[in-house]
Length: 227
Image (cartoon, rainbow, N blue to C red):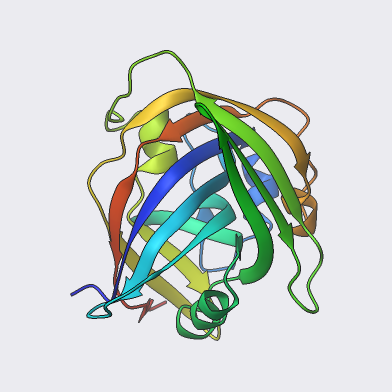
């Protein structure tokens, strides 16, 4: 039974191939980096989290969010591992840090639209944490949207229904949603310091970009992972 529901809109996935050893060095000991055709991937994912609410709540909260993530394995299970999640809602950040042990940080963020062009800016201002900024403009390309084919690279990067987080121990969380509908996208990154704040070198090439259609999502409680 889910504990949270929400809609993700204006979503963009920007991914860079990365040496698996570099990513693996930043992971908890219980996890190993997942690869596709021998490459690990680091992704900046930005979207508006719309009407996020606990089960049974009459109203929700809406705010932009940016995360830096990779893809991991724990035994036979695979999922997402977050290095940071920046959100423009201090109450939700506090709740996520407490209830989900996720590395959420308070940020000042805006989303502006000019026709089909979306510009998202985020500036981390969490007390005691390093500053991190993202300024990205993106739009979908002219190709038709598609549902990622199982086993494909787009599916590896987006079709993930489990995440892992490390607090006093390793935890697993589950989300549920219909498959993503994606379109190849175009993005211009005018500022990005999320990588450096997480201990990675800044990427020096263009990302692989997918723009996502809105999606309704539910999330379950965290459960501890054995071993």
